Image 1 (tube, each protein chain N blue to C red):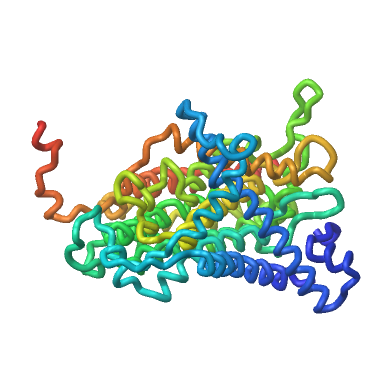
Image 2 (cartoon, rainbow over the protein chains, first blue to last red; image 1 turned 180 degrees about the vertical axis):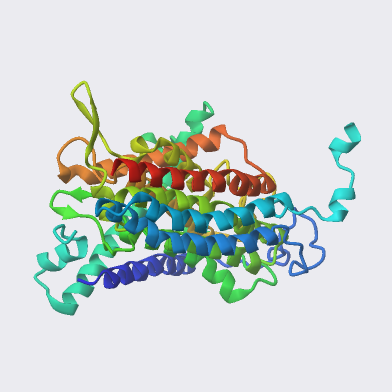
Length: 139
Length: 355
């Protein structure tokens, strides 16, 4: 029995359930179109401006770091799987640990540098930084 | 682990089918059964248990009008929600807006394909047991974030957009600590196969007054357990990490513009995701379906464990304030990431010394 046939079967069921619910709902539900009903929700106000604008994603440096660390975790998985069997087969522990420690260490240096330069923080735009907040007024 | 018969094989043998036909039919029936078990959990959890638990925490009564203990609210809520009018807001990105509520429950359900849910009588409720099980389940669970971004972008709503972007930021913050902590379990077990990880937790750690404490990794390495639990709460987006939804800040985040069946599907997908998070936690740290009593009631222990996790999430929901998104980035990168790598190296040294 192939595992992947079974996983594919659950994928099919997983798609069928939501599609089935949508179909049932489409048969049951009323449709009462009214003007104003389909307005984009903006806390009851008339929407102003578009949504798809240029937007400061304040964590893009973190996102770049994430890519590096994500690949690192993928590369560490094979090491983690063979670690215990290799130890039990009599390979000295230091032979197994040093390559991993070196690999993680290089990235740790990178993280330390990013930490110092403030890259792993929510970037504050200069406009937001200059704006007075309630806390500033109170002090 | 070829000795344990998986659920699809059991069905194809019971039906007397063999070959490819047997594989396909067995797989489909098994998948339908597992899918419906999970749906039943979410059906009880969503309209009923969640309200009852929150009410108990806040000293209220909650649903008690329809049926015993208000249980018949479940079919009532299902019919009510499915029969609601679907409002399609102006300017939504149509195929994406419709696909997002399909992707979320589908990805969470797909994660259950490799979860060993234990035995119920002669049946071993596990659909598949590939050698890469643990990596696969994290891969499936991560697809959920894509759906949140799809919903956030396609809705053409500013709150939804913020919710979708927050979902990405949250994903960046917890994903690596989560997987690196799970890797410390892999070092102990020496395999990624789910049944292998469960089997590695059946030894006796020590005995207290005639009661054997098993080598569940939660007992072997409680530090990793707490770390994984925290990262898992962020993965499933529950308090204190329900930042993408944040009802008091951005209305309902990515699902602001959804109504009718589409809203139900998001709600359902989130609950399936909570149960998937509980299932991953149970398999990696709580010995899977093991517990006192014969092996044939293992499924019941598994249900107890994932409902225990659900109760924990609801407890956290009632008791903990939400962290801010910039705080989560710092918790993830300056706290959990460093701790998880420290845990990994420490685990490797300890295993190297004792093995």
